[in-house]
Amino acid sequence: MCCFGSFLLHRNQLRRKSWLMIRTILIHPDPRLKKSCDPVSEITQEVHLLAADMLETMYDAPGIGLAAPQVGVMRRVLVMDCIKDGPPRPMVLINPTVVWSSEDLTTYEEGCLSIPEQYAEVKRPAEVKVQWTSLDGSTQEEQFSGLWATCVQHEIDHLDGKLFIDYLGPLKRQMITRKMEKLKRERARGV
Image 1 (cartoon, rainbow, N blue to C red):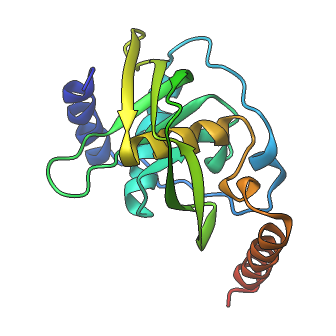
Image 2 (image 1 turned 45 degrees about the horizontal axis):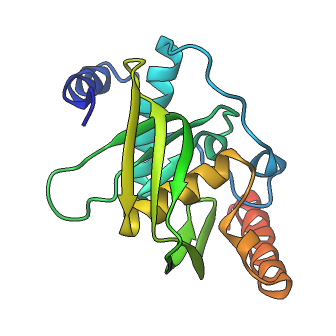
């Protein structure tokens, strides 16, 4: 779990001080969701706080993954935790890169916190090996399979300005986009 023992302790201290915050999740269509993110050049306190806020936001939503552009920060940072039962495994991946993908594909019904209540089957590599920088600045590498593989690929797509609906046909994509435009109008009116 890299440095997450100390990270969780630090997170609990921050919570007591009320420094953590639930960030607003951008809803599609928002132009920031379609832009590629800049790499993180230095692991600063700001990056640590962003990661902690993103984990709080993801768990609160609730979701299993969240990328920085979904909270309006155009940096290559994502968080995820695909454990449904048992102790959580929060992960922070900075500048993640897929370094290997299996030829075998798998299909999962995907959803997205930026496209609420919309789901569609997406085909992706069944396994991927990802390399990233951790919060302590070390290089990490892990091979993911199952839901973890789908989640990490989905979140890396966000960092590249791609949404899961981009894998769908144009009619289905337009239908979902219209629903999201309606949802945004309703939220703006306070409905």
